[in-house]
Amino acid sequence: MSHPVKPPVGSIGWIDLTVNDAAGLQEFYQQVTGWVAAPVDMGDYNDFNLQRPDTATPVAGICHARGANQGLPAQWLIYIVVADLDASIERCESLGGKVLAGPKGQPGHDRYCVIEDPAGAVAALYQAAAG
Image 1 (cartoon, one colour):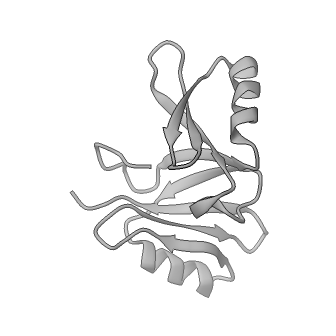
Image 2 (cartoon, one colour):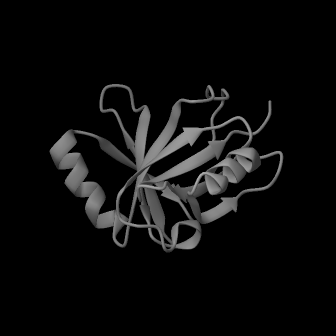
């Protein structure tokens, strides 16, 4: 997930679904929602951006549970934009949340992690690269 314009803190920067068979499930969402799936090359397989049919604007993604997404639960995952990922992780843990995956990415680049809140709900925290 990389943005040409830095998304505002507090916004939902992205949403995606991680499943074992992204290729099979993308067809389901195309038929049910009208989204158009565009492959995203991941090396030896494709994940998919789901796009609005009228503008080809990506609105969500469907990813295989491989690579960086290995071990993520099969559910729609929102990416909440934060100003400082490390500070948000510290607050999350001090308030009874857990980091389930990450942080991933390099300082100075897009970074994210997946957290579980004290109620058991899962979300991702996302810090866009400076610039």
